Image 1: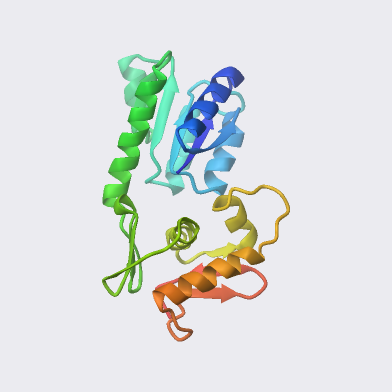
Image 2: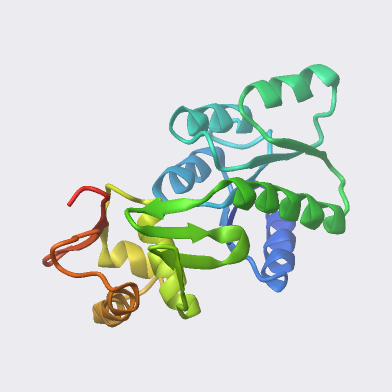
Length: 222
């Protein structure tokens, strides 16, 4: 699961990043509102931890901008602002939760788990005959369960979440592999071949199509 932290206090941001990575999460940090918004809009995040008072762009405005195109990703405000009016304003802007500073790290982790659990329970992904149930980490095709490796599962999950969009090999390396340097993207083709074989995908179905020289696109329409 990928978490975006938008926090201008470097000490707090680093503390949260280290702690959440130790909990097993993939963490991205932005230290101002504008950069945070760019990361939220350019990368698939599973949850966003957002400060209110930020340089370049206030957290409340970041939240509103994210919600214009993304209605699902949970957003948690981490802020010293705690009046009832401010809380209501944050929730109206599209936030899912509101945690007052200073806060317990253990409480934050539990809040994050709750939001992930709620999201996963309601988020069944489908692509034609293929279905992913994230809460069970289960993949089926024609109602038959398929065993995928962790990397295969992550790649298939990513393509279906971005159904209808061309996913370049460089995007996949960055977002799925979490590699941010030059890397041989040919490894993706190896995993795709394995996925297609396990799901019995033939060329006529074209549920996951190769875009030559670019990457892949998942689409229900053949």
